[in-house]
Image (cartoon, rainbow, N blue to C red; front, side, top):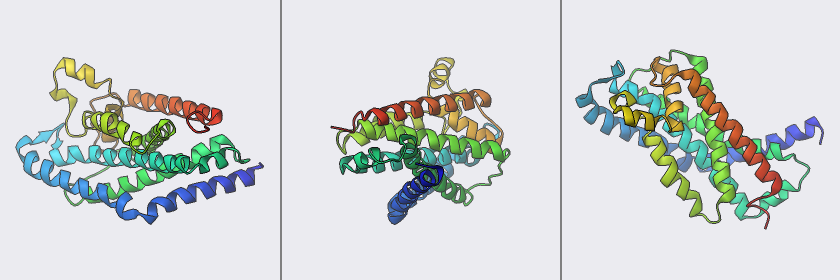
Length: 257
């Protein structure tokens, strides 16, 4: 395939992925907004008034970046895992793999769909957050970079989950027993400086902590983690997941029977 043909094939796949989640926008875009409102009402209004300030900010302000990252992570992940498992279940992924379209473009097409949904929902959650607290982004380039890299990372993670899933139940195991605990223990609602030294060390083994804090630094200018270390961690996992996903797709592992 020449460059024009590759571009057209990638564009077609990306447009298909975007149209897929827009067709059911009530299920893909709105739930995160509703969940964010509930978090602000319950944690922000009721509990936040008792907590007071955290990290030098009002609790709602401190919590807002974490909620935005929560939306980006869950939506980027769920979009790719559901979409890829769908084409895998229908056996249409085999048609893609034997087509002239390069494997890396197939990978990028599915990931792009997850990135678009993750960022779009993140924007919706950010707008929703403005109804409850004042948000002034301190470092726009860093904020945009972190939200993009995080969406890419969890889109790749969703793809890996879908590849190895043998049933629709399997695509819920990782989000329930791995992703959700990592997110809620990743500093979304608290600063790890409140924890004991032992638990701070344990918390630093959680990769989500680096993403949340890097994003919080971009928005508020405060972080429990060195931002450069956080960016290196995110980039490392992106390279790892991309390499692994590309290898598995080329080999047809978990796809070709």
